[in-house]
Length: 327
Length: 284
Image (cartoon, rainbow over all chains, first blue to last red; front, side):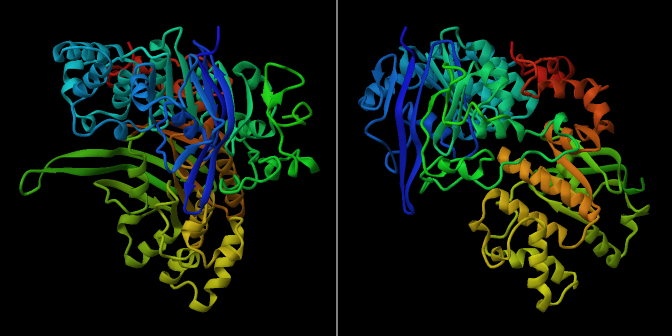
């Protein structure tokens, strides 16, 4: 079976006053039904731009996709799809959950109306039917008093409740693909645990979930696949168990070691020296070379490709010395 | 170890006003009977979720919020009994680093101004000495002298947090309050700042009051931990015992909820059992 989502050579450029920002550079990955892919990376690595590019939610201009970019959902090319056809997909086959539910929900409309609107956009329903279904969804996302919540405005709800409403809107058409961009970053850990459980429980076995996060713990808990991004590129992609057992790319290794924990008590953390290079002018060689502890002289001049690791062909890594790197 | 800061039954209440004349209709008990000690040279971690009162506690210790009742003792002396001069000295002894390094530096002040403003205000240096002093302070946090004449916008989040730390250390404080000081930073930069704070602690013989919602951070650096919930401290003790064998059901639920690499794959939901008001909104 072909993958549900196939992204090839996706490059996102932003034309700014300071020059062209290469936010996403030649990103390719495939996502099958039932899989949960976690895209991890630090701020500015291009993970959100990748997520927003899929349903073409990036403002164009200033953003533009390079001509080679291809995003196919079930074989349908999204990059060249006319806008009306695209609108029919957004919300119906592609659901989205954003980081900050307070800004994603309309402050001026009641919760019930916002879910009903999402429902009626893609299905012929009377107002009463939509309202009934909306209440149903509030129950499914675990809201105790759905009648009261339905009448409420977003500001009257806690962050966790707002995010549950977002999940209801994103899932009400049973999408094939759910894109969640830092869905729990603004929430407390106990609320985060509940929201993550909810996403896991409500996704069908055949839904593909793309989870954008900076939290390795969330990836560990949720994902079947991992893609680590750095400076606009995927530097490592692997099935989650293999990745956490032995990360291969020096950046991924360093990122996992920089997490403070009980094991790091009493000794300095292995911080990554320096900072991410500017997206206006990525370095010519390996983009991580300047901060890499195992850099070779040719790393500074040769831009490495994302290639299968020698030790495991199912894994992709952007470092020719990956199999020699020891954590 | 000597007790540096001793807080006894501290309460900070915010009035709830309503109506035309803003009559006080009640109070939000943000800090509601907190007692804790910070010993000289130790790091005390305060963990809790948003709204539990941890920031209000910090603000009260910093004299930025007025306590409703209770005592704050520095070296065994109650600061509410201090005269004006002693208050100034207290403010010098207790400094703070805030969460957001973008909001806590004035965009129109150069780094030199930001770092030396307090020193000048306290009359500790003359105008002529300020550059030299500032260079030393910046070197302490790993920044070069070329930073002095730049404005905050020229720096990354991690660099700004270094500047905020230099500014806090300028007055040679004995207690540094870090209110979510690394929460806004990316993982790799966070590690740099945590290492810096740890090295500065030994170098300057500092005590830290480390306020955070990140259990990993306190696990890494705190000597003792206090868990806050709804304005009260529900559990306090050495880091290993609190995180290794938590006694309170809330602490246990909090720890289970944190996703850790190598931990459980399914989020434990014992939070539903211990927090009825959270359970009311929980997954079915």
